[in-house]
Length: 174
Image (cartoon, rainbow, N blue to C red; front, side, top):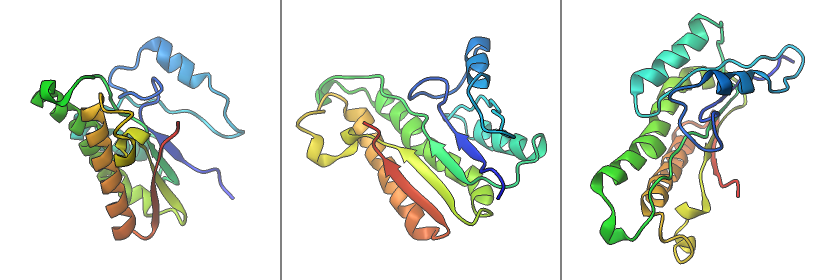
């Protein structure tokens, strides 16, 4: 059995978009332990820019010969505003949706041709308990983040319904 091919977005920090990979970040990523025959390929993807994602996936195919993805982990995300609903800026709300929801859609659309090739392909969305209505009493100050992640969870459910050949799920790591 061949080694699985895994794509992880947002690998420059715990949860972040990878827009500008610094030499130090790239060196740190390349220094990760890998299994025998494995390698780390660093691609600077900007979840705000559709072409960044499609070009990154095309690069995997064209330059690295990757023809299938067994697992895509959608880890890129932002949570950078806090405060009451009355003070939410429309621009900040849209920015969170752009990365946390639309970025997921862009990633899925760019990777589905490679995900569909694998017999047991998986798409995992890193969500949060903040995206749970039952948690609203404890997380009310991160509205933009929670709403955008909730929409991402809905999108993942639709992907799982429409693409039975892909195991699509959202997880809350902590």
